[in-house]
Length: 340
Image 1 (cartoon, rainbow, N blue to C red):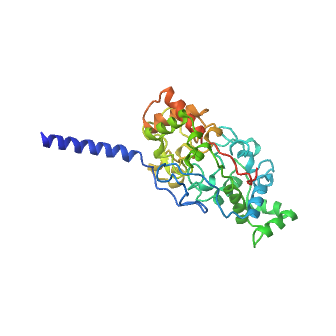
Image 2: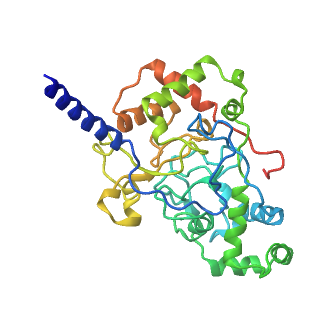
Image 3: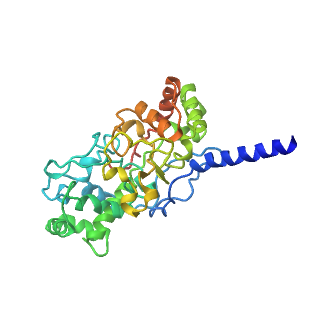
């Protein structure tokens, strides 16, 4: 009988180990982008898997201001109709609220635009992680024919005819106006867009009364159900890759698009099909629609789908209500000194 019990415990241990293994991210995290902190200074760091969000220090103000000007400059697009801010509206959570953004000539993209807020903390850029830094990311839309449809030669020619702008580049960079410096200025500005003082951050700092009973209960369920295994850290996400459909085939009843292949488009490895960068949940209440395909129109829908395909469970109405209440506590605001 003792041997039987021992064998049973071994079998259960193996099964449990398999379940735990499934919760780990698909693929290895990339190296952090420049400026991404390795520690948060959070007094709750040993207690909470979510870390306090604080602004990045040491950003040169002249580059931040220059980057803001470029972020709003439509001369970066081929027909001078679009700027970065066209798809990343700073007054709407850093997104445009569309399922797919509209590029030059009315071209429609095939993937949902992520928020630019807090992007400086992300370990890679784009849903498929094809850019290792914000500088690489900044160059992408400029050259994408479905977005800005331009190129560095055209952009440099246009900006080079602007004498005041040339002076600002000379003040910010020893070598003045270059493609690399355009990308760096935009990236530096984006690193300044840190949304501080969410109610959950205040909770982490010890203001226990700032959250309601429902919101605290939502955080408990968020942890206990397993959401926290992918959505943690300073961004509540943004630090690993994961397959969309760990415990169910999200793509079973649809025609798969190139964008649905996710990280496979970068690595060409079969195990990376439908693998995406886990999105940050910071300010998620402001950034509908959700997922790479913009298919979930509300936060309630997004939570339901995530539980079904990532956790293998159907949530009750009470579960969804409380988790959504918790997620709404992650909405922060730009620092007073940050550009708007």
